[in-house]
Length: 283
Image (cartoon, rainbow, N blue to C red):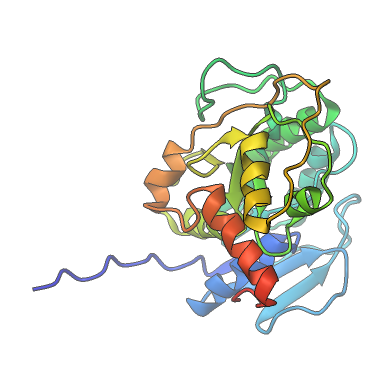
């Protein structure tokens, strides 16, 4: 007799997405399909997918009206200006909520680790020591999200996928790049899966580094892309030294079980094939 498929936990009853870029647009249909309600807080009045309720507000200032009670919150705001930009926005958000949701996800970045290259792969146990204003702002945002909203922090590496073709453009334009820079990445589809899972898990980890299984020097990645495109690889910048970090994605892999795009090879091969055949990516 075949064993029954594992039961997928239900989504939160009502989820507020703060910011509605590509991650939000990927996550909302998953929650709606399983019976959840989705509300979006954003600064624009652009059209929303069917079933999504929009609230227009700018968290740079206190909100004039209270927000509805929600069971979960996902913050995917781009980094505001200044070191305290996230803290200001999150304070205004927390003040406008009637209660702290049972689950909050704050999407940060592995960019909080912007110091010298580490001698070992970085895990969730390593403490950031940010040096740039952007990295300090990200790290302060993480701490504010934890203090104000008891947030689970997700640190994705370089997000790529359909509509995120910056590196492909660099290769096609034969831009000069630092071949020795250590890089990590996560396909957008796997990042959305991660956020969906963390919303549904009864006891998620407090911090997850969202990276795939193949950190690699940038030169290795652009050379693969160039071979696949049939063009010359971008030239190396001889003035640039080794930079970047290697991040360990073991925790993420144990949570998801598998990645749909475990390395850059699967992800970029699909993107290049879709561009060649003018095939729109699936919803």
